[in-house]
Amino acid sequence: MKKIKKPDDIGKIENENERQEGYTRIGRETIDTERTHNNYHIVPAPDTRYMEIINNRIKEVGVKRKVKDDAVRMATFVIGAKGDYFKDMPPETEREFFADCVDFIARQMGKENIISAIVHKDETSPHIHINVVPITPDNRLCAKYYFDGKMSEWQTKVYEEVGKKWNLERGKEGSDAKHVDPKTYNKVVKQATADARAENEDLKEVNTDMIKRLNKTLQEISEATTERDKLIAERDKEANYSQALKDAKDGKIARGKREMKDQIVALTVENKRLENENAILAKDNGDLFKEYQKEKANGQKAEVAKNAMLAVRQHEPEAYARTFFKATGILQPFIELFSAPIPLPRNRLREIEQEVEQERQEQLAQAENNHSKYYWSK
View 1: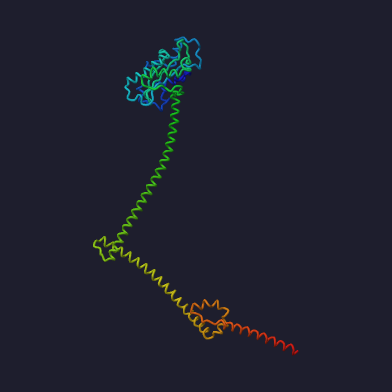
View 2: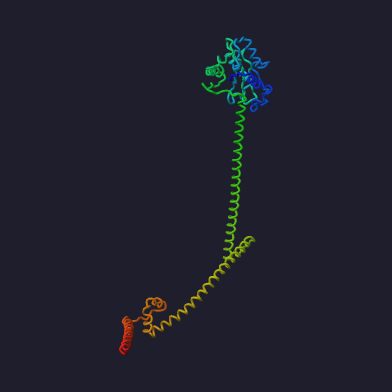
């Protein structure tokens, strides 16, 4: 239920209810004009404008007080049912349901105060608009008399007198739910549509990205499959060549053209492999021969040096010892490379050392004696 005060607002509701000129501007998002001809009135359609009916009714009952600008001139009800309640319902049964709704309003506010009652079938679900002038039994224009603090009572009554008969549930007691006028509903629908479109664009972008990723993945799978098939083919081909080479080495000559071709290819590949190995071996053998020649020359030089040293040590042991006895520790490892050294007795080495020391002392004494002779001669 909604209370209407301004004549202009009443005119807009009339245009929308009666589908008069300009009604498509209000709520055009929800109205299917191709089904508008299915709309029908429960009470006779008004033959004049809503505002004129209201003014005539006020005059008729003789409202004593002057109607203020902010006075409620019309109460409008919208009654329907949720979901698929009217789906597959016969037309006569549907009309009976809405007639019961109008009778209920008539019992509450007076049949004579009803301006119009029209059923809309060109929107989402069938529903009825009932418009009433709030004239009280004592002939006052007063909406408060009917509605202030009484909405819960209205819900109970409509459920008891209409809802039960038609197996409908009672509205939630104390609910703040309100009917939204077509203009407001249209704004909400437009906003919801804009939000849905924006979300749809986001989804399109996400879907496009997902499709790109999917295509890339499919491409990678295809490339991997191709590579796998290639490797399998090469493996099988190599396996055929291996078998063909084995058969050829075993003396099993192929009879078929394909098998013979495999043997020829396998033998060619094997021959090439052996040529490469021979080339590597030849190079290695050449390098080894060069190293051998080098080592052989070094060995010959070492042999000459060894023989010369052994000859000196064998034939002139005292001269050898006199010359090299202090370096024996250094030369010994070198000598052992060729042969075992000729051992010199420890006492002989000592004798040589004493002889060297004695010769040194004699030289010193001789020098001192010469010096004395020179001194006394003067």
